[in-house]
Image (cartoon, rainbow, N blue to C red; front, side):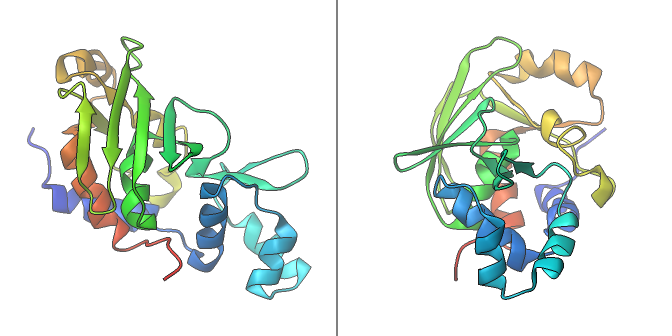
Length: 209
């Protein structure tokens, strides 16, 4: 069964992944990418809303949003909590929930990132540089590929159903065991995944402009 076009994949992902509260998601992601937890009080001040309204809006965020013991937000796509996807902006070491985030966030934030992930089959590192323009540089190994599942509906966009199925593999051959267990998954070159990320980023820019 042939894959849909990259443009079709991007269109479907844009529909399902777009944050429904961009004015809330944007400052959260921006602050986390600076390596700092997001205090609810700071959000309340920036949004100029009451405590009650803020709590109502926070409750509508995805249930996977990570908070620390003090109640500060530390993860929303990009996270301060270590995962298998290391995401470095300048000297700031961060992590992402899934492999696709590593190629979605650079064009969304207009930043360049150094990425190091781990192949779940071989345990070997996969590294590359992701640019704001959606270009991949210095991919090692050059045969690296990314798995991706296009959610059927927004409720499927959770870490368990989406993020944990988006992984980086050393090669298409290595990924074959994953595909056997996940026939609904797509397998893209890292370059094609970055192109999809750039298209999706057009609909969910997270920078300050």
